[in-house]
Amino acid sequence: MYSHVVYLFFRWFNVLLILGAFAYFFHVKLIHLIREQIVAKRTFFQSLYEKLEQMVRKNTQINKTIEAQQKESMQLLDKAEQWATAVATVQQENEAAYAQRLKYLGAYREQQLENHAMQQARHSIIPQAVKGADEALHKEFAKSEAQRQYMQDIITFMKKN
Image (tube, rainbow, N blue to C red; front, top):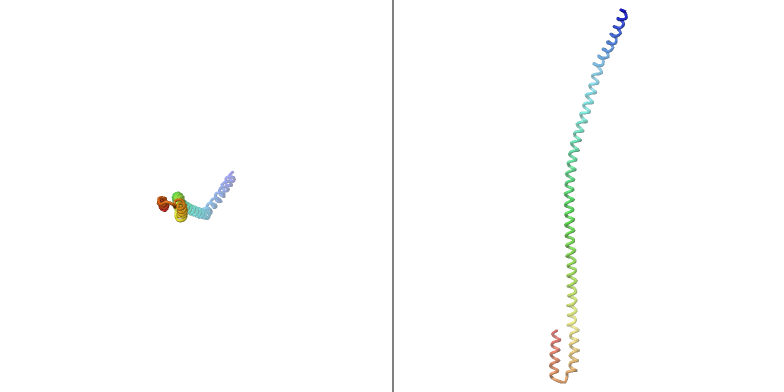
């Protein structure tokens, strides 16, 4: 039994010695490498987090810029709509004025044509009618003096009109 206890003691002693050597090796060599990797990963993740924060700030600024530009574009669209409405109103007014001018010019042209026709009648038709009437009346009333006076009055009246 004594040998069995010694055997168990040395067996556990060897296990503890191996575990101790492993712990020492782990503590001296591996823990340093693991800590360096943890620090490197932490630094890497922290830089990623900082980049993410920068991107979020940049995205927020871009969103604000987009909102400002959308407001400005809406204002410009409203102004363009107002301008288009004003242009349409002015165009309708111009078309109405143009139609009124055409109507006035048509009436003025008709009046001018009437005046021209009257002037032609006064210059050519009335003198011919007066001459023809004068000759006819001379033949008709050529015999008496009263008839001559009557004929003269009618000719004078016709020349005035």
